[in-house]
Amino acid sequence: MFFSKSKDKDGVAVSNRSVGNKAEDLACKYLKKTGYKILERNFTIRGGEIDIIAIEKNILVFVEVKARYNHAFGSPRESITYFKLKALQKTALIYIQQINWGNRPYRFDFLGIDYALSQELPEIELERNILN
Image 1 (cartoon, rainbow, N blue to C red):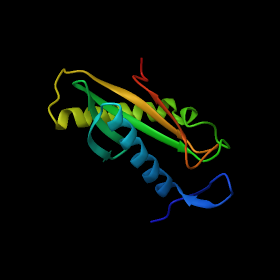
Image 2: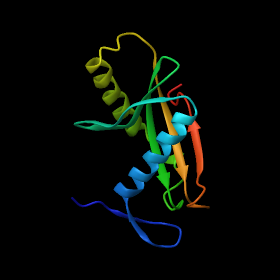
Image 3: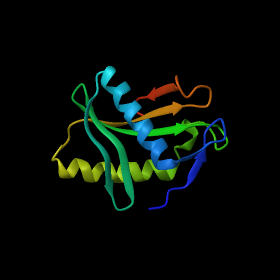
């Protein structure tokens, strides 16, 4: 399978999949430390994917993770478009139906990982409830 290449701050090519996996691993560790219980990673349906699905204080949380090694295409937060949010919502509704979540609360969070200044100590930004 072909994955496009990004470049880190030193100009070294890295695949988007390896960046994504590394970011999701770090995101899971960070979320666990802040009280989230990870249920699933990379839940995929036709037309959508959710990076991390977790529970925090009895709320089902769908987490979009974005990482950037440089800001050539903007910050991690700037990568969340209207169309991405719509795809997240659609995919989340399928998941909610599959697990019979019912009318219990759920939300969408964003976790950005910015390696632009330091690959050893990236900046991590967690934004809860990005749709409100």
